Image 1: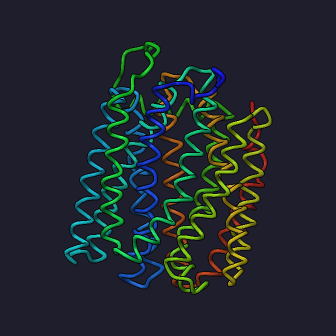
Image 2: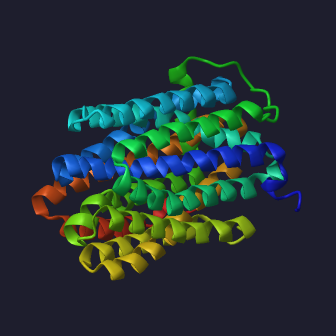
Amino acid sequence: MSNSSALSSRNFLIYLIGSTVSLHGLWVYRVALGWFAWQLTGSEFWVGIISFTQFAPAVLFGPVFGVLADRVDRRVASIVINTGSSLNMLALGTLATLGLVDIAVLTALSLIQGALDGAHTPVRMTLVPNLVNKEQLQSAIASTSISFNVSRLVGPAIAGVVIATLGVSAAFTINGISYLAIVAAVFFVRLRPLASRKKKPGDVWSELLDGVRYVRDHKTIRGLLIMIAVGSVFGRGALEMLPAFADAVLQRGSAGLAILTSVMGFGAVVTGLILARTTHWLHIGVVRISVVASGILIAGFGANSTFWVAVPLVTVLGVFLSLGGVGSQILLQGLVDEEVRGRVSSLWGMIAFGGVAVGGLVVGTASAAFGLQNTVVVGGLLCSVAALIPRYTKAE
């Protein structure tokens, strides 16, 4: 195995195994959460609300989380946050088993989990570069992408079986237990020494503004974040309606939802494998093309009502969504300075996940008024049109 492969690093390999186990639990949770919200209410609006609560804290507090990630021991932070996530999920599983979860309780616990995930995003994104050397960074990001998308392929299939046989409470409990794998992995790894800071930390607000100014003045990073915003709000936001779409439009219930989520993961794995081999062709224009193509595919998905047509559409969609998301991460992590890595990573997370929250809420609300399929079609078209606006995709 070459030295440029992150898999040759013992520390990274330990982290990747623990992360992969945890990510399978995460996808079991996400499928169960959307399905449970739909079961409790039968409302696209509430499915959108639940989607919003998962990602909204990343919008509200993401930059603050990024400042903290640049200040604190990232290893300790990861252990504490993931332990909190485990406890929150075990509480949700217990309450669901006892029949004590209504839509208000589900919203509250989803919001807590969203806050924990928002806090962990910049920590996770800054941990990986500290586990490998610079030559292995591209391989490490691509490998974590493959891990994420393999879990998106397998996790929903597990969720479908678990929900059908044991119920949603078991799905939440499985996720709670899975967090312990990443806690154990991070406990045992050793981080590479960080470059010393060029200046002493100031107050949180001034450091936050420093991060924003850094992005504003770096044309390529700024362009990448804008493209991710477009894809998240107009593209991935529309896909938050998959639970409602699988049941109300495609008439396939939780099994259909699991299949659609899994094939999207399969498409993303294909992209991850390509990026793991080489990225010499990767630049901001490729990210832009991926967002345009994603919007067209989402519009086609919204206009379709046949399940076996939806499956290949969503598979190819997974390829392009992953190309935009992972490609932007690889480019960003190769460009950003170490001393602002946490803050820039938090802005990426705020935009990527917060955009999904806003998009999911808007699409859920609009679907209740104008119809689910019409809204998804419009969302996809807006995604493509917005990505075609030229000036902000030009690199330095």
